[in-house]
Length: 238
Image (cartoon, rainbow, N blue to C red; front, top):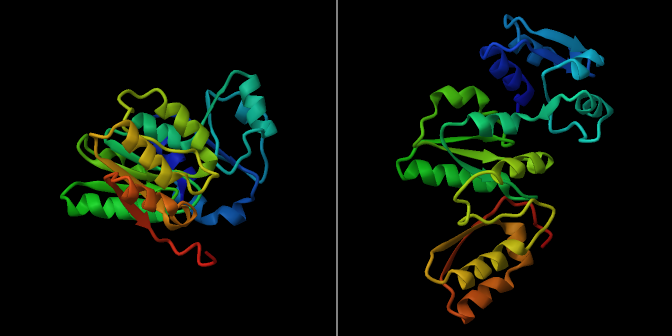
C-alpha cells in the first residue's frame, strides 16, 4: 500500500527530521527506497537502533508491527509517543470521513460506497488498507469531500480511540472486527430503538449469510431497514 513511504513523505513535507528504519535490508526495499530519494531522510535498514526509538519525538509504527514489540516498548518507556499512519491521517484530514473496518467485506463496501458517492455528484477519495495511502492526497481534499477509508483490523484500536473523541457520533454503530453475523441484527436493534429514523446497514456477504434470519425478522415485524450486502466472493463454502 505504500503507507510507510507516504508517512515519511508526509512528515518530511512538514519539516520533520525523519529516520526510516526497517529490519529488512535495502535490497528488499528497493522500490520504497527509490521513492524516498531526494527527501533528505536518514535510512537505517537491515537493523534497528535504540536511539531511533528512545531518542525520537514521535514513532510512527507500521500496523504489522506487534503492539508489544520490544522496540515500541522502548520508545514508550522513554516517554515517546507511538502513533500510526491512520492516526496521522485522521488528525489531518479536512474532509468528512467514512471509515470501514471489520473482518471481511471491507474492500467491497469501500468500493461500493465510493462509487455511490461519486454517482451522487460528490468527490470521494478512496484509500487506506484497500491499497492506497491517503496521506499524499490530503492537499487535494476539501471540507465537502468524503474520504472513504478501509481500515485494517490491526489498527482498529488506534482508530476507535480517535473516533471516541469525536462529537455527534450517535448515528453511527460499528464493531471492531473478529465477529460475523452481527450486522443485520444490529441494524434491527437500532431501528427498534429509533423507529422514526432511517437505518442503513452495510455488510459483507459472509455476515449476511451468518445472520440471514434477520431479514425474516425485519419482514415479519414490519421493520423498514435498508440492507446493502456487498459480495466479495469470500464465502463460497456457505
